[in-house]
Image 1 (cartoon, rainbow, N blue to C red):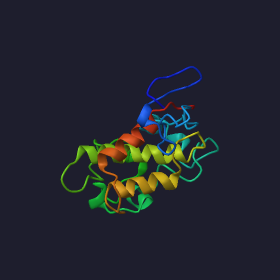
Image 2 (image 1 turned 120 degrees about the horizontal axis):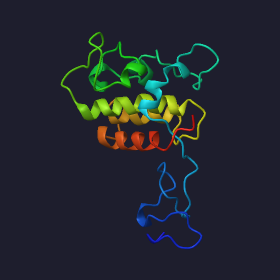
Image 3 (image 1 turned 180 degrees about the vertical axis):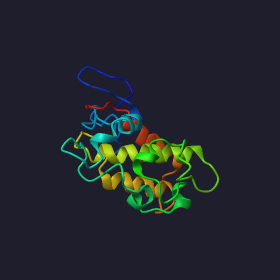
Amino acid sequence: GNGIVNTGEACDDGAGNSDTEPNACRTNCTRSAHNEGCTPGYWKNHASVWDGVGADDKTATIKTSNLFNAKFGVTGSQSGVANCMTLLAALNLPKTASSCPTVGARNNERLALDRHAAAALASADSGINYPYTVAQVIALYREAVGAEAGAETFSSAHVKLSDANELGCPF
C-alpha cells in the first residue's frame, strides 16, 4: 500500500498494512475478517450470558466465576490483583470489592489491561469473529505482565485488547 485508498481498495495504511496484526489493513488493502468484539461493559452488564447457568451462555468454557490469576496462569504480583479476583470482578477494575483487593502499588494501566483481558477472554470464547483465540489472549497477557518473555508491555497489550474489544458486539 501507498497510504492512499485507491479504487478497489477497502483501506490503505501504507507501511502500517499488516497481515499479522489484528484489525490492521492487510497488505492487499482489504480489511481483516476479524471484526467483532464485546467491551468490558457488555460482559459486566450481561453476566448471565457467561455464568455457566442455564442454556443462554454465549461462552463455551470461560465463566464469570473463573479466577483471574488462575485462568491467565499468573501471580498476584504480576497481575496486580489478589488470587480471589474473578473474571467478572476484574471487569470492575480499577474499582474493586474490599473482599478481593488489588496487590502491590496501584497501577491503573495494569488494571485497565486486566479489565480488557477479562473481556477479551469472554469475547474470544463466545464464537464471535474475534481477532484472538483464548490461547492468544492468555499468551499476550502473560507476556505483558512478565510471566513470559517478550516485547509486550501493559500499554501495548492494553491497546491491542481494547481495540479488539471495541470492534462492535453482535449480541
